[in-house]
Image (tube, rainbow, N blue to C red; front, side, top):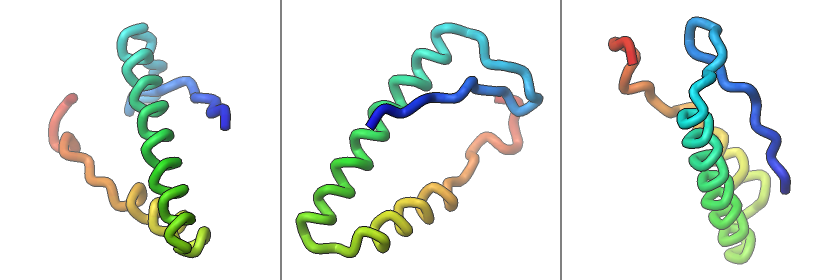
Length: 73
């Protein structure tokens, strides 16, 4: 699956234009996509319901916590 990445924005709405930051984001997303795909395929091989594992992965993402919410990072 080819994943089309968005133009990344800062919390103030400005575009993230630093080439190194954009590169790191791309690499992180590509790595994450592969790990999630592998976990999904493993679940299917263990006969876990497809909808259940997808729902759980979505729930994991929805429950991510921002450790920087009180800082200016």
